[in-house]
Image (tube, rainbow, N blue to C red):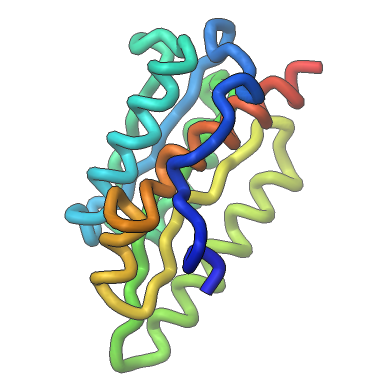
Length: 160
């Protein structure tokens, strides 16, 4: 497991560019909101910590993780510097998990290829709810924090 010995919330603040010039959109899945809300909060708080103005942070809610792709595409058209998609897909008894995970991953990859505006993947794909909770503020930290740091680094890269 990739996060077995990693806390997703630990990073060197000195390596993160200032967010002052950037606007960031957060696209948040309403499905599994006990996971996505803490991920959103971790991302939001980290963006604020790194000087992104609150008025330059927008939020778009979508029903589920599959809809994150459309939400991100919509946000890219609104002049933001980076987009973070936040979702949680938890393994069930059917192949639905595989199809959703693959579709969302490919869709976000396609948006990154087709647009100069980076889309950061903050979609947890866990085997059970406990794993998702562990990565959304639990014992492995908060993947939303990691996504916000990545968004700032990619927005800085895109602006050069």
